[in-house]
Image 1 (spheres, rainbow, N blue to C red):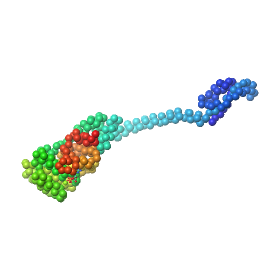
Image 2: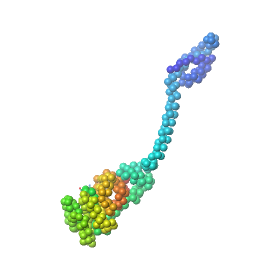
Image 3: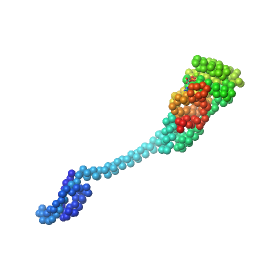
Image 4: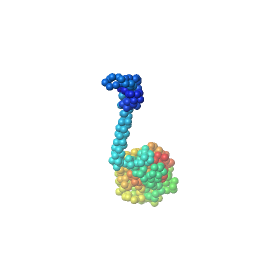
Length: 341
Ligand SMILES: Nc1nc2c(ncn2[C@@H]2O[C@H](COP(=O)(O)OP(=O)(O)O)[C@@H](O)[C@H]2O)c(=O)[nH]1
Ligand SMILES: [Mg+2]
């Protein structure tokens, strides 16, 4: 607290002196009449005012303005720096390019497991509505009704447990329902279970089943059978690389032996892609996704459709033969990929 006495000819003059020196927040503690004059000889009427000011308040009243200015200056500096950083990072962090109104659909794609790079491209091509996003996805995804295709044989390839035997059985029923004659071949002679399942199937469909050991036996069977029926060929998962190479040698590109690759939709994109790259995938005609009923997101279907650039021929939605299978259309797939929104 700072205290001081002020003397004026009148009370008003003393108060003016107080205001001038201590400011408007000064407190008047007391006032009294005094005599004033040169050399301390009191010979004139005057008014003495004792005033005080809280000097910490004096400092504080000055500070907020300064502090605010400082903070604002700092914020402006930071904003400029962030702007500069954003511009610098834009080419290497592509998501910074996404406008605010498209962030929603970008985040939706990411939450469904669509690869961030693909999501970026989709968002750039779509406007900010879900319908426009669906249309862009529909344009990208190719579908194929392989069960209606006119071919001599259809070979089912893919990793163990992907669903080859089960899906092939469903397709056999589907083709039979479309009045197409089928016959069955198994290259999976070591797995008693899969041969037993196909035996059952051949009984139900009243069609032939042959179990063979090598792809080299297939041309002869096709030669004999192709006129009468479409041959469905089940393969084991373990020898996928060799079998796909043999198929490539015996039935080079564009042959009437179609190859359908099974992908387990519960696998993440990288694992599925690893399996895909691990064989002669260039000869595969279409891909099928199994176990949709067990997958938690469907973005990987988009990723793998783009990465393999193959049409999707079948989707399976459960273990039950013959019901749990679907020939996809792009509308259904687009909906699925964005999580059924
Ligand atoms: N939940 C579910 N299970 C499936 C589906 N497709 C196949 N399975 C199951 O996956 C397991 C492996 O199938 P399988 O056809 O033997 O695979 P393969 O080794 O590729 O021939 C079996 O238990 C099938 O019942 C599907 O779409 N959904
Ligand atoms: Mg099998």
